[in-house]
Length: 114
Image 1 (cartoon, one colour):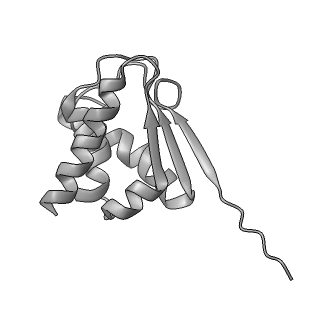
Image 2 (image 1 turned 180 degrees about the vertical axis):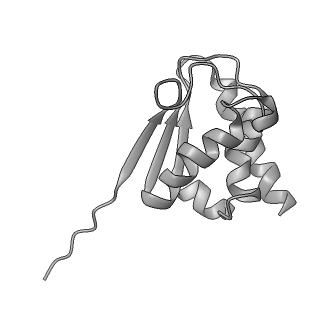
């Protein structure tokens, strides 16, 4: 008997599914902070799906604090290991590739601090 593994996946388009103007680290910075994105969108998707892709295209001014809290916070605050994040999460920005590098850096820093 042959078994087929079915992987579930979720694509989050940040400017459609969360906010057109995300900003800041936490609620002190407003309702569209990195913490709010992580808690309301990213973390629930990471817990429910085998693979999550975050499309960051559509906004070009993501701050370091937003990205650190949203993505690095998965490791620091939400209990995911660096291995889980690497296996389950991908992200892209069609125009500003340096945003992807900044997310890599924030995930690495969170992992190193753990």
